Amino acid sequence: MNSIVTGRLEAMRAAMRAASVSATIIPHTDPHQSEYLAEHWQVRQWLSGFTGSAGTLVITSDKALLWTDSRYFLQGAQQLEGTGIELMKEGLPETPSIEDWLCANLPADSVVGVDGMAFSLTAVNMLCARLRNAGLSLDTTFAPIDSLWTSRPALPDDSVFVHDVKYAGENAADKIARILAKAATQGANAMFISALDEIAWILNIRSSDVECNPVATAFLYLSDNARVLFINENKIDDNVRGYLAGCGVDVAPYDHVSRFLALLPESARVLVEPARNCFTLATVIGAKAVEGKSPVAMAKAVKNPVQIEGVRAAMARDGVALVKLFMEIERRLAAGETVTELDVEALGTKFRAESPMFVDNSFGMIAGYGPHGAIVHYSATQESSSTIRPEGLLLVDSGAQYLDGTTDITRTVCLGTPTPQERTDFTLVMKGHIALGSAIFPEGTRGDQLDALARQFLWQRGLTYLHGTGHGVGHFLNVHEGPQSIRLNHVDVALTPGMITSNEPGLYRAGIHGIRCENLVLCVPSDVSNDEFGRFNRFETLTVFPFDLQLFDTGIMTDEEIAWINAYHQHVRQTIMPLLETDAQRQWLTAKTQPLCR
Image 1 (cartoon, rainbow, N blue to C red):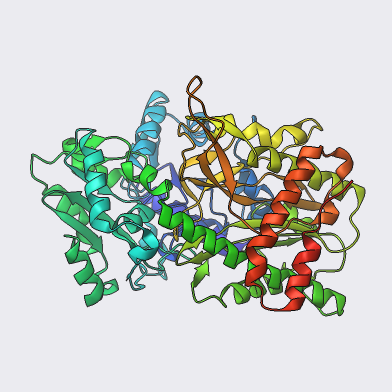
Image 2 (cartoon, helix red, strand yellow; image 1 turned 90 degrees about the vertical axis):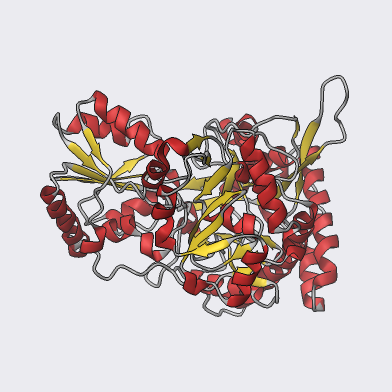
């Protein structure tokens, strides 16, 4: 048994008994509804030992269960072993929702306790309604973690810096005016913003509070009369304070936000997005709240021309770093030198960091060799890191934060002679990648309407993958951002020119190999639009790095698919060849981008 985790669970149960709480729900989030968290907010990880970026822990007097999605089924099973925590595979027909499980397993009149600072207003309202129907009640003030986690990390205090408008393409004052004008169309004269990437985007500020995500822990209130950034003031130097003052923004302590909201004038009509703001603070705003969609998400998702050109430059820079990475992997293997998954991670960071524009990785690299590639969000450790041999498949999913853009790319390569199954699996994934990447679609099309394009060839063979096909990507911001996505479930957001989204179908055979092929694509107007049927859009592929030619099975490809690969590789060669530094690098890229033939 994992005595550390079981001890923590028992301590939580003691706190539950003291508060007359029958069950508690611990989400993986923070008061800002973030996906990626500062260490201070890693409560679910501390209690369970599970490190995935998605998952919710439920604790009762005699049970503990963790719900997570398909990306983490294998990882969850491994990390929860010996903890007594049962893995609940979210999304499978046989797995009940958390609400259904609680209603079926708790006696009537039981109390479910949650920390209202870690649950959105939407989540609390839905949970309350569901529990009430089963005779259960919800306590939103159950927050004993500080007394249990005595070594809990402090809130991050990394310095804030200004993201120059030469990269951002629009100044903060103009963004604030634009956002408040949008809020007014929903009947609001103010906005309260909790999402860290939205705050960073509006104010053109960045920090390093969350690993790989250049955001600052803060809340932001905007109105014509008051603009206040609630943040640890130690993070703000005189230069940044002066910059914010020039934008009309005052600075106040992070923990003063509740008091400020409680004292808002009666005339305030504050736009609050229920799903992006925590229950506790939304409740403080109370009747002054105007519930609606934040206009920031769409404004941030649609990149301006300066940002788009920056991303193109960042992609070319990234391609050069990856040429160096994969050349070094091949060199070490050919020389008989030891190379591990952790070595691949370190080398990727090293080569990207050679650029003066590099700030950080955009997420922890996934370097999965052989069976580890089948663990969708695998993260190598000293204990798990495999030694890579000159055979089999290596999946590398990585990205960088550059001052002018964020990158995210996955390549699956064969380190020896590919087997027929490896070639077939890879080609089926690439056929879907090409189908999505070359799609032309009417204005207003959503990601869920395109998702099947990427899956169709796998489905024809009784194969699939359980994760989404594409997520939005920020501009020197979070590598995962909304509001758009490409996935099977409905997301009511149209893919709009200026949006950058990933195209990453995959196939994962547990214990054998994993394959994922990912480029970032920019939604742009299509030249096939016409007056009779309206405007149409298409994707421009931004990522510039070759796919492994030896893994293609041209026998199951169409002429059009082969032509797409050849045109893409020609673009890769033209884009990054001038940036390469040595003849060896140029020869490597030339070999990797030769025309694919039957």
